[in-house]
Image 1: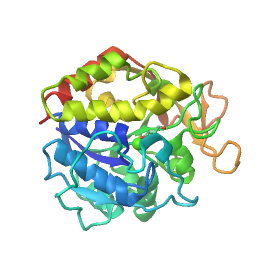
Image 2: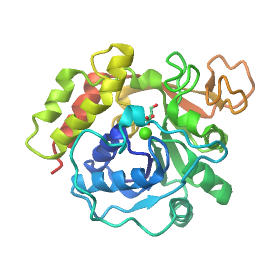
Image 3: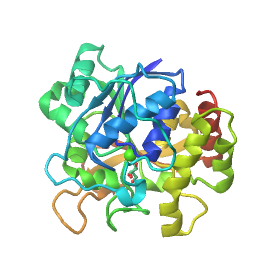
Length: 311
Ligand code: BDR
Ligand code: CA
């Protein structure tokens, strides 16, 4: 199986991504590292543990990482995810422990101690933990197999400001460090996730499952999509973070292009914008494969098939 670390700020869509990963034998989940983002760190690490227990995998190692972005103050998104970050389903308080080690140290130690080119980082939130890991131990850049990240946008551009997507906006300095690190990056922007809509029919498939995880997923999606449905008037909201895990499982469902991406870190107006050089007008090297399309029915089919395997 592919060894992965999931770096995340759950978040209902993060939670569904974690369920998808834990349900898939193609992965060895080395650890889940929580970061401040959708809600503060104390909630994201707890939510990660709730989800591991829901998946019947309380032995999963969950670590707490950065409490705030590298440079800017923390911006959260309770208006999207609710006060707990995981509003919707009723889940018990987690019994499994939080690991004592700092997430950034776990990331560095894992990458340095495993064979070079083997560990994949799946990032579902602001890139603070990865940015800090790169500062602490720059040699990890030559050892990570790849980073698959949800973040950014070009036509769809911004969901938190007109110019910026949430994960990049919250920690643009970390995103810039990661994109400039030399690690192969695959980026799943809003333009892709806005094709993966949680329509009523798709959500119904989860609600009808005879396990616990299916209806809990439906409850999370119901809560999460209210925001986007009201905002954009679509049937269902975009399901962002599970696309990262799905891309690793079935890349044939996606289409992308290898280009240069840089991140705006200076202008208040466009802070966190992903600037994509589609036409090679700069001499900057291609550093990111930007995913532009997802085959949505295939994606939801995969997700349902996997979530159905869980308790
Ligand atoms: C991203 O922001 C968060 O609110 C979601 O969990 C997702 O990672 C979408 O912009
Ligand atoms: Ca997220």
